[in-house]
Image (cartoon, rainbow, N blue to C red; front, side, top):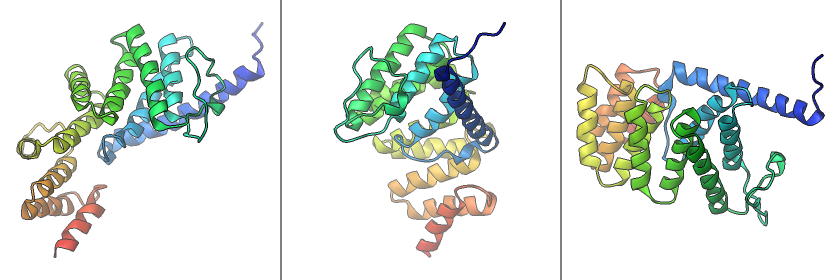
Length: 250
């Protein structure tokens, strides 16, 4: 005889099914077109949230590590509400519809503790790996770019072919550009562009190279990179920006 579910359990199952369906759609799009990933270091947290959430919900709730990762993710997506009272440590967070924080700093501190707890408990598995990526993003948001770099580089060393590797590489590119390494980065991107075994899609390399050359005030070279996107990759998601840049320069 089957066990009867409570209304709370039914509601939870429906919510998880809806979330799982959404994440599967995101995952499918990114598998087909991974170079749509663009944005700042902070903006890429949205991508990490979507993709890492998939791993948390594909398994059954009996996996404690995934449960705890999912709970930590609820904190990341909780709204900022003026005069909100942050949940205390150990407080039941199942009423996630009511979870909110008074400031981004408060939410980030709570999330940091939750992801550290996941990482410390499970170590090197899927939940631990994705928790580390959240911690890297939090470190970058707090200005600790060295810590963020260490985590991202460590992730790539262990998971170079992971679906999240592209977003991590873009994080590092953005970090290099913001950390005074623009010339070294331009050289590395040019080398990658000329390589027969590229780690990034060519239009992504061209776009990141163009942005880096702009930082170096090498406007003509940047325009050449933008023009190559238009000529060689007309269906790239970067074409609108490349066309804008080339048109404004003419």
